Length: 163
Image 1 (cartoon, one colour):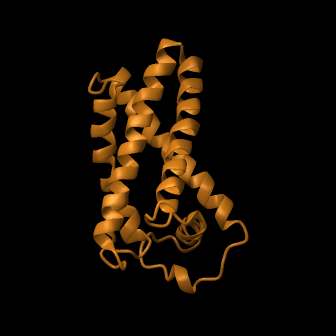
Image 2: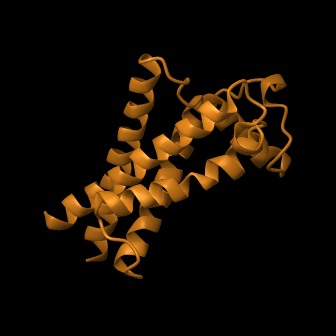
Image 3: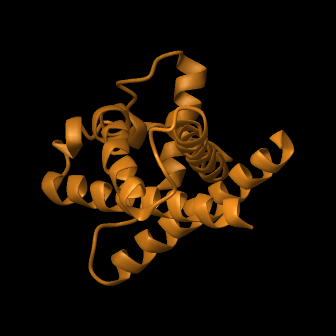
């Protein structure tokens, strides 16, 4: 049972994060905001590790790390894995969520507090991206992306659990 759950979580992670990435690419091509720059995320993570602080890194002025793009992508999927595990636990252990689109939407909408209040400030964009040229658009985009991600997690967990 534990092995099946671990495999299910891994599969749902890869598929749901992939859906999130495809969503960002499609909406960008349709005139939306730029997709997340995973190289700068990798640079931020390396700065956190090397300087032992989370905030106030002059990321744009720092030299590029040789593997920052790969590090950013791996970190992106690791964070996705955390979200899937959290959803799985809230479903299977606590009975708070079910693998339905509605609960997935709620989960996704609630999960956006992480980028709004942690990652955006940590990357220098301020709370809810207020230091960016289009903070409202960025915040709404993050809300939509996380909503799509949450629904993907829920539906994929439901689908895999029936297999």
